[in-house]
Image (tube, rainbow, N blue to C red; front, side, top):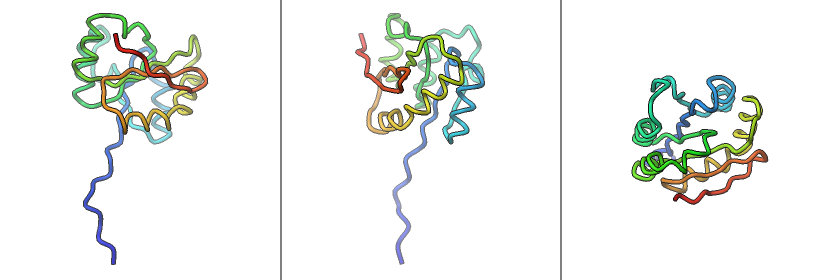
Length: 139
């Protein structure tokens, strides 16, 4: 008889859905596909500075999903991202609806999961409309 393995299975990642991705389509699609999601507004007020929530999200080891491309250019956010070792995926897909955004994320999810299980932060990856990913340089 085989002994049960003492190794714990890897923890499933939790995705933090930034306000820029909405409250319904993206989180509902990810949850329906079996992914764990936390919404910005469930943990922070609308006017919480990015530097505050970035640090809090990193402390919980959550992975940030956002459409806010400018986050990597703002000095305070970049400093918070680096010091807290945040893992971020930024959707670069223009003005697409929530349902389309969710479909792009779901198509890219196998690659996203591979990255979050093999790389530690800080990092930023761009997720493009065709679900390809490209690592961004942190400034």
